[in-house]
Amino acid sequence: MPLTPADVHNVVFKKPPIGKRGYDEDEVDAFLDVVEAELARLIEENNELRAGSGTGRVAAQPVAPEPVAAPAPPPQQPAPREDDTTRASRMLALASETADRYVNEAKAQADQMVAAAKTTSDRTVADARAKSEQMVNEAKMRADSMIGDARTRADTMEREARAKAAALEQDAERRHREVMGPLEEKRTNLERKIEELRTFEREYRTRFRSYLESHLRDLDSRGSAEPSSTSRQTQHVSA
Image (cartoon, rainbow, N blue to C red; front, side, top):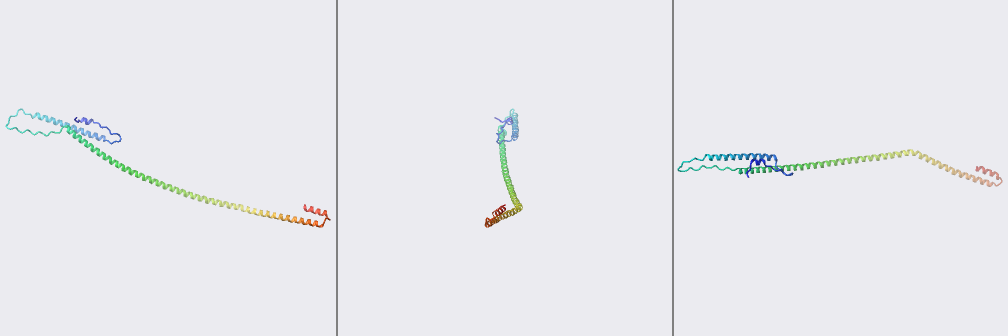
């Protein structure tokens, strides 16, 4: 079946499935326009050649040639030109070759873009990983610094609190001594005086008892001549 410009003009290609690479629609349409125009030109040129060839044959027919002794050699026929099918096949082959070249160029460009994207992605991942590690290290350093500062402040506060507590305890002990010292001294003096009074009381009782016993013995030794006088003296002493 011969290929016509209308066939080239009306051809429709399916779009590739999602995820698969395909040709650029604008480039394919532009190439088909070139093929259509070239095919139309070739067909028109072929028709003109055919029309010219038929007219030449009609005009060249002689009416009645006069006999001659030796006929002249026939004129050399022109080389036959390639027909439409051959030219169309050649154009399709050229179109296929051009399409393959476009495909190879597109594939090479796509591979190059993929490689560049992979390199960029690897570099981006490496940069992100390095930045992440740097941020982690900086955060760890800040955390360690904050922990160290907090520990230092805590130790300082603990020392200050211990020193303040010791100072308060010493001050309380000093005030206790200042307040209780005179009281202790007074209590000691009172206890000593009480002991002295108790000693005096015991000695007084002892002396008084001895005095009474001695006086009673004296009275007994005088005899019973003066019972009433002795009785009165005894009552007076008891009182």
